[in-house]
Length: 274
Image 1 (cartoon, rainbow, N blue to C red):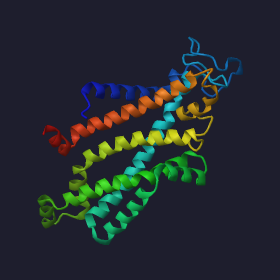
Image 2: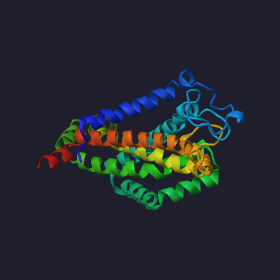
Image 3: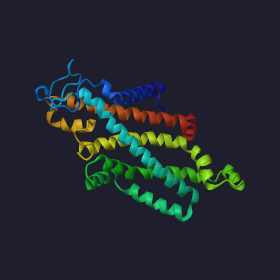
Image 4: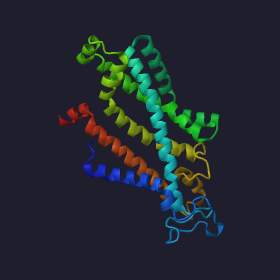
């Protein structure tokens, strides 16, 4: 379904608001997000504490602002690394073919056949609950999707007449890949990248909720939801506020990705016209 411009502008506005608040967190925070105050614990939203306080008396507004940093930075880092690995593997396999393509195809099929969530939990559990293991788990479970898309596009592009003409003119393989093939698949990679970022945020949220992701006292929306389960009856805002932030962030990124797909995918546009 084509996303309207209104939905696109709304998604971009939400995304910019979250990113801007995360960057300017030291200036916007009204309290120290790490400092407990047991005398002020579990307070409802008020003028003194806009989003109330948690079980340790920490200001939820300040923690929400800081909490967006972990999800955004980790998901972007994992998506960039996954894109780098998948792009390299897909370019080499699709361009050279033969045993190289067979090796990388079998390798990507193995990784895609592994249940992503279970494998991420296994990686995080094996190497310990840390940011490094979280990013490693996301990269291992995500690179194969990039490589298959890149491989399919390269297999199609390398048979085009202009590629054959460039070969006849003595164009090197490196120049063909970087100057002529790669620019023709950037639009699809951009769409896939935005979708992977959204999925990465959701995966980070799940692992952090299980205690295998971002560790306290670092503010993180998923950890806030996990810590607030015991107080969902007396203080439902402790779950609703960070949960809403996670929803809005994933919603905005997914809508941005779908809008880019509508605008940049020529084949999809042709089908839609009919």
